[in-house]
Image (cartoon, rainbow, N blue to C red; front, side):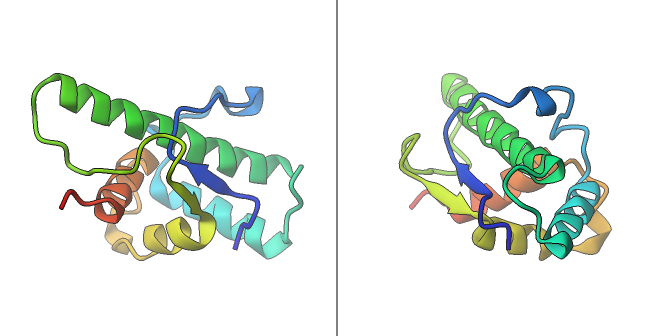
Length: 126
């Protein structure tokens, strides 16, 4: 998998290359095609497409944390209970297979919503 791709579930700063990309507009299908291309090439850490994939994952992590903060502030029950920021680290060997396992008829949904679903499932409140 994409070993350099580490998703820390904390707010992160995005590289300039990803500032025009948004996980709310990139579809799950588009993202998975990009992942497959990067994996097939065996991309190096400085590969622009690998950086794009990594940046999108970081943006999702940021939006996920903000979503949980907003839900808590509204007094609603949390949909998930991830560890505190900086304590949960997911690498691509965990996240990418879960995204690929989502039904193919959902590939046109946003990457952000697909990732939120995966992370909610990974961190259920007990």
